[in-house]
Amino acid sequence: MEAVAPYVCNVHVKDFAFSRRDDWVGFTLAGCPLGEGLLDYQHLVTATRATERGLSQIIEHWLRWQGDSASTIRTENEWNLHNLRYLRSRAE
Image (cartoon, rainbow, N blue to C red):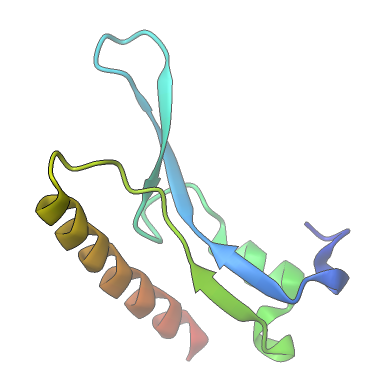
């Protein structure tokens, strides 16, 4: 990250986690709300100097299908609100 940081003008921020599959054979890489996974957000901000350079940050996430459109949209909206609060709380 440090090698490309001087050239970064925008950051797509998404958190992720690994979990065991139901049959305990293998793992799944899936998205999760910011701050709940393995993304080192503070390192991302520090390395890219996002706050001092005023980089734009786009919230992105890998939300799994929730079984139907209404549930998926509701969960996506919940994640969006959570992720906005997360980013805003770190910008202060």
